[in-house]
Each structure stands twice: as structure tokens, then as C-alpha cells.
Length: 133
Image 1 (cartoon, rainbow, N blue to C red):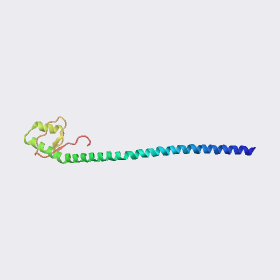
Image 2: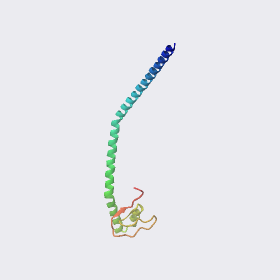
Image 3: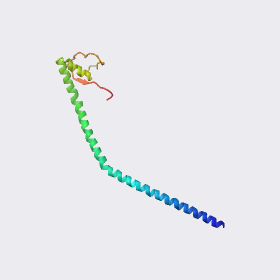
Image 4: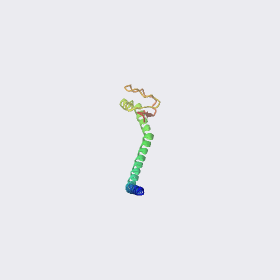
């Protein structure tokens, strides 16, 4: 009789292992299917991602060109305007330039509300740095 209990116990244990194996296999198959579907989704989005990257790169190139132009031409134009304002003694134009932080090269930026500094030697004007940029 003891052998039948042992045999029944082992048979039950074998059935339990078989059931566990079945459920693990089903779950594994389900996870593989979800992984495959996710991979297909990622692959289908790759062309859109590439197109967006190219658009971003084109926009960045335009920004870089604009920045280079503003850095090379901007100070020269502001310097010419400042020189013209000094030559013609145009106080309104001097005030406008001072309002936006444009000062003569080598001159300290006046504190807010201070009078416009006297005209210097007509040197190039440079924009004052604002903020942390």
C-alpha cells in the first residue's frame, strides 16, 4: 500500500509539473508574440523618425547660418548706425541704441536710467550681453 501512495504522489507531482510547463510555455509564446509585434511597430516608425531627423538637421543648419550672419554682420551694422548717430548728433537714435544695450567699443554699459554717454571717437558699437546667453 505504501507503494501506491508513493506512486500516486509522484504521478500528482508529474501532473503539476506538466501543468506548470504548459502555462509557462503559453506565457512565453504570448510574450514572444508581443515582442514581435512591438519590433514590427518600431521598424514601421523608423522611416518617420529618419524624416524627422532630416527635417531637424535642415532647420538646425538654417539656424546656424542665421546665427553666423547675425554674428558677422550684426555688430558691423550696429557700429555703422552708432557712428552715424554720433556724426549727426542724433540723440533719439543714440537713446534707442542705448535702450537695447548697444554701446561703443571699450565703453562701459551705463546703468539703467543713466544719461547717454558722450560721443567718443566714433568706434564700432558692440551689443551688450544680456542674460546668460
